Image (cartoon, rainbow, N blue to C red; front, side, top):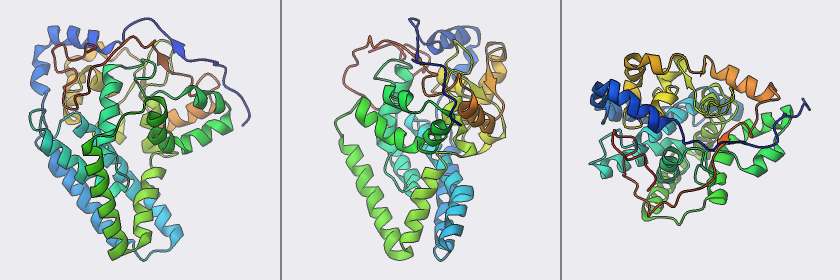
Length: 339
């Protein structure tokens, strides 16, 4: 449990991220993939059903004992909330109503956020779009652990702790590494969420608020579904910075496991990413991939060559202009270029 990781620094490279180049090659060979881009008309109904399911569950658990409440939060409520977080991820790419309808996208994001208990829909979008545009670039890609995290969590036991605390790092890291001035929509998101939490507390009790928030945090930490956080971009094989997972947990995570395909085509809804892989299979089949998110967690904790340092980074050579939340990424044109 005290074995230390062998890496002492991130994997610094001087090449561009691979997705823009591969996207252009695939679209040249398979232009029909452009037809897969755009909104998913069924997505809003799936999200609505998940939110309503959580509302019913919140009523049913209000009188449970604390141990049972936490157990259900870990095994059921947290899984739904994690899926809703990934719904917010889809919404951040305007895949619910399309890029031409930003207000419905934002409103659905607020709605999907409600059972999670913590306001994050707008803030997530602001940082996640930069993760796509500036993948691996120091400071701008806040998906990469900070240098302090990498130094502190180097042993098997501390890596377990890091995985458990992963949701806290995801919330705090952007504020420290790349702070942004709050925007009006973030205040709106916060007011809506806190109002909802207060109403839940008043009508159903504090236990239900704990069920919402603790379930969300547990399902982002040492949890099978949370394996995707590590599987997506941690360098399990030298030189490769994005990995896909094609297992059954994609069914409850909007196919976020198809992560190479997602970064190649962020304008394609998760429901259509398997079709991207089918059409352009020769571009993906030979690349490293994961078969189990549980195995990903196990390998991350036990393998001395893997840890928070196992990420590809690039020197910051960008000077982004004023942020535009609804600028599309990878829509088949030049949106991926540094602004």
